Image: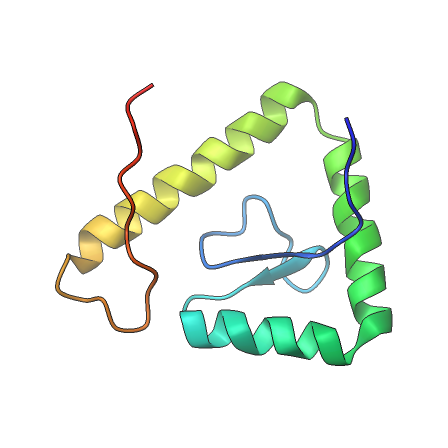
Length: 100
């Protein structure tokens, strides 16, 4: 498995991310963009977080990696369903996920 050494930023839960260590969990689009800019302005921090993210990925089995991904997807879908379709401000648009 090849893993790049970049921090992970997400608007979902932190099952894939240890906030402030391997990336950031940002609850809104605005905070997500703020964190991206923050990392671009702090290349040493971005490098350290990227290395931590890479180590985390390399230590996970494929089954564990997919389960973390599925957990994050389920969390995002539940959150979007709770917010409802009319609450588009400050959140990413929901995309239909094809059935497996």
